[in-house]
Image (tube, rainbow, N blue to C red; front, side, top):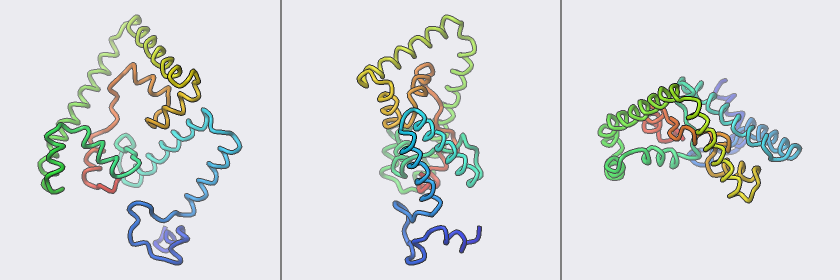
Length: 211
């Protein structure tokens, strides 16, 4: 697509020039049309289980689109609601000293100092996940049955906390975590899923606007 073709997708640019699109950028026609389609579907079909499955599917499509645009693997792509959330997730995964350094150093000094430490932490997480995956191969049938049993009990507790409504429990899970209730239940069987690959950490640090 040419530059003029891209500009034509944003009706507002016919009248004004956007010099800062960091927070609320201009909306393209394609986004307007996509929103209209999804709202129409919610009006016709409601916002029940299929609605939340659709939301997750759209997130997967969005990750795939960004990955293709940036030339990276989909598994190395993380979506956040904002730059602040993305940087917060990076800081939350650091040890206390790194978090303090991030607040007192310039971005360039911090990157030089923190990059090898962050890489070491990420690789430790990867190794932990590999150990968990390897160990799970040797679980006997009884252990797997017990894991399933406790996962079911956990799910039942979430439904009970939502007033006995599974639908409300599902909506709460999506609203508070961005994951489905079934995904959260599965995570109780494997409490340390790898949710951030090394490339994601460095992409976020290198490009703060990436979230």
